[in-house]
Length: 161
Image (tube, rainbow, N blue to C red; front, top):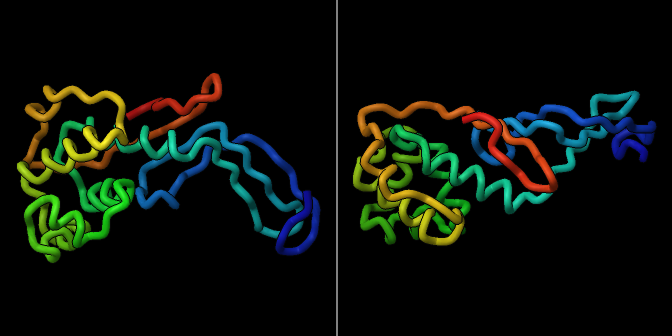
């Protein structure tokens, strides 16, 4: 293949790729095909089975044992296909409240945190989720969850969380 920027040939290899495009700063994909131009800095990333990957990211987020962070609230809302106003209506809060959660201006409260996790789990975005996890969530702290994903037998899997 040729580079779309300069027309030079590209080389393909499997790499570890930081998947910032999903909206989360802590998602790493292992063994992803990356085509790099031999002349310029242009590259193209091939991410297979994105819907499955996004569901797995959602599962990792709702299973973490600390309060959701703003970017995680935004990711889950987007995955549900909802606007901020729509999430606010479903959660019974003001539109501004959702905006403050997503921008980390105000931490999401423990009840809203649990409700959002349940909405995601029950909306069939995630196949299995134990309700017992809700009781173990630490509402006082929100930690970053590093998520490394890889593929095996044509399926995405969580390598570390």
